Length: 174
Image (cartoon, rainbow, N blue to C red; front, side, top):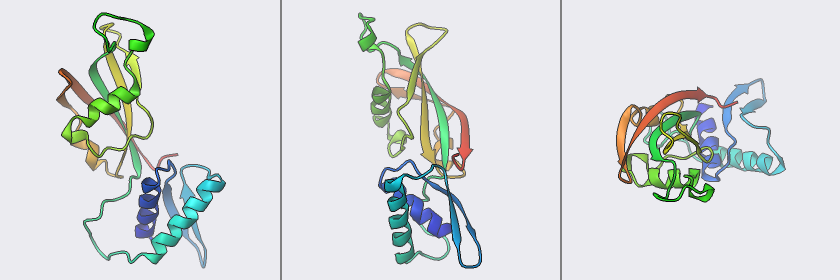
């Protein structure tokens, strides 16, 4: 049954849905799927289509090289960005945005392929008024193997040294 849940979650990720199947419970002739969100009408049809595709596909037995669908959220903290994008202007439109953080992360090979849950939050650092701290939530496997290789390291991003810290990981997103 776990392979069906993985196949459903892969299909949901492919369709860029925030919904995930957390687990399933098999009764006599009924299967209950527990989701992380309450589905809308469109979400319900997406889950139904995902289930049909998962049951139609021949799922490989044993270990395979197929990637697991994300089942948890890893909360990363990136420190060291410039809070103002312009060197001379300190206007509100010159403040670093979450989209610019995602673009900067994409320029580093290690961050390619990471899927953000939502747009990163950017706040001004307390210690230095011209430094920003970005809070980034990314999808990860249940064990967190993808993000564990990225944390507690310093990366050279756009001429700055950016430190990546691991805030926490939540399994089975509520």
